[in-house]
Image (cartoon, rainbow, N blue to C red):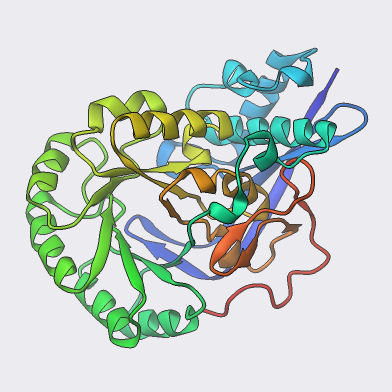
Amino acid sequence: MIQIRHRPLDLRLLHPFRLARGVTDRRENLLVEVDDGQRIGLGEAAPLPRYGQDRGSTAGAVEAMAEALGSFDPRRFDGAAAGAAVPGQGAAEAAVDMALRDLAGKRLNAPLYDLLGLDPEAAPPTSFTLGMGTPEGMAEKARGAGDFEILKVKMGADNDRGMLEAVRDVTDQTIRVDANEGWTLEGAEERLAWLASMGVEWVEQPLPADDLAGARALRRRSPLPIFADESVHRAQDIPRLADAFDGINVKLMKCGGVGEALRMIATARAHGLQIMLGCMVETSLAVTAAAHLAPLVDFVDLDGPLLIADDPFDGARLEGGRMVPPDRPGLGVVPAETTAGTTPQV
């Protein structure tokens, strides 16, 4: 019989992080442990306030899932978290799912990428995210992120042009833009034409999540590819929006874990969509779980641990611009002895 327990993960950000929906300088995540009496599998939940989640609701969902799993056989881990999931609590489902897969890998003495038959060296490089700020602040952040090939700039404010111009003035790195639902259809058309002239590669979620009609119209006229984030949660969402976007952003916290992420990737490929693998503000624990899947996707945005000041785990490492998971069993994540000096000063 397994035991499932949880405890708080309080994270402090290196700098206040601003996007179209607000600003924060810390996160209240949750650590989940699945104990079979010999080994412990680890998982992390990063609750999404955008979907009515907080640490309290996530903890309650983990407890309900633990009760539902009961005398669960850990060898039957695939789909177990989904079968016990609490509706609307995808972060809790993701944490239990990755903990079960971590435990499975430890039982079999193999990294998760080996269990999936993947080569971690085939992963695309990760982007590094610049939260919204003043033009001067954005330029300073961009200068400090010179180790990355790709920058992802958060937009969705009145000074969008000033922010992006400030970044472009100091770097020739690839730039992607995430509007976080912050634009209107009319404003997005104008912005997209201008962003194309600034050499932006593509734009993520320019319109509100439920405006698929607007997204279809915008895609027909857009000079840049458009990716869905808030509009897509799980594989079942993809068929209805496949004609409205050029790609999707898969996040473990949105979809409910590794198993559903694999289904999303397969479904997106079947519909001819490109795929980005993203994250929330997470420690190396959750980001490492995602990094094991990176060889399957086109784009990666797994910079969560690089945005926090007190990452308590040692997992995926930034190597040659890629987030490469360790070769230890399971997720390969262990407690960090120290995080001093491991994060970029941006």
